[in-house]
Length: 388
Image (cartoon, rainbow, N blue to C red; front, side):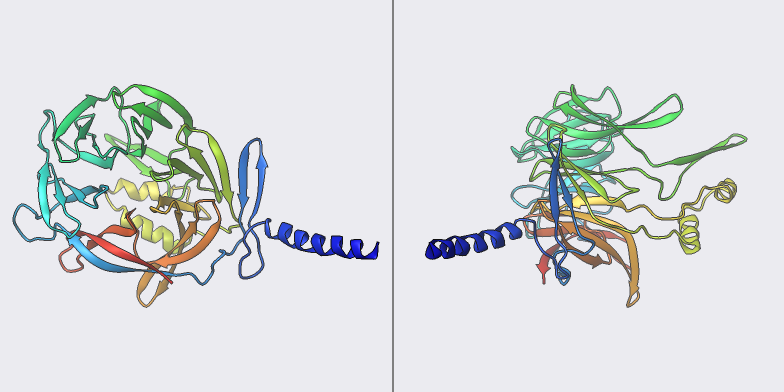
């Protein structure tokens, strides 16, 4: 009888140890990620510190696109850009009204479209993206339409908008998700909706929140100014995992939607918002200088006491979410911003400090516009990502 009791004891102890490991990853200070399910939604409660507090990243410059001083491959007024499945880079040249295509090595390959209002032409393209089947999708705000091109740049089709559609969030096989804003009874409203590729509304995800504004009329002059760090909806899409992230940015709570508009996860972590200082006020007013009437608006502006959590989120090609916080610091003459990085399961993986904003991730690389400090010219540059 004693031998049997000893055997059960040996089995029970490892089982208890294994069950303790299932509570979640442990950070360097012993804090754990805690998860629970409420009404079918998984809640991911992260500790204050990342699971990998020593994790850091650096970006090594590899190649630039459109940096030629002259010729067909020169890009003088770069706009939106996209990267296809062959790592070819598409840059909208707003001065010419065309899209210039470059190979992975930076060589100019061809031009797609041209300036105009006819089929396959652009007046003001403001989004470039790719459908899962390789088609290039271009939205043109001024022409109020969406156009499609084949993988080789051949024009396929387009449709006119019945409403003003804002920048798409997520492109799917035969539809795309957009955030759509408009004025109603003197108030601005924001909705997230899904449209098919003929312009028909498939689903209204609901109403979201635009930044607060202050509107003032002085004689014949009407001025609208955004209230800094007013609560608003921050949205981004993940084309790899087909999901949309939303943060109502007065709190560190991120909602995760599937492609059908259903919330299936919520991510949070303890967070103390950063104070909004007099120096921040001076920086904001200097950045938005304009008519003299602005001075009166700033005098009566409802300045915030604290900053919002974030004004920008983006996803990399691993399915990780990068949250650009409003925490900054000066280091060696550079202004650094803290980015919180969450893995595909919503766990707070790392915090990295960057002196620039990553624009797009693709095939293990990062792309952004790099500005020449002498000329002010922006050049699209690709970087290799090195985690340490």
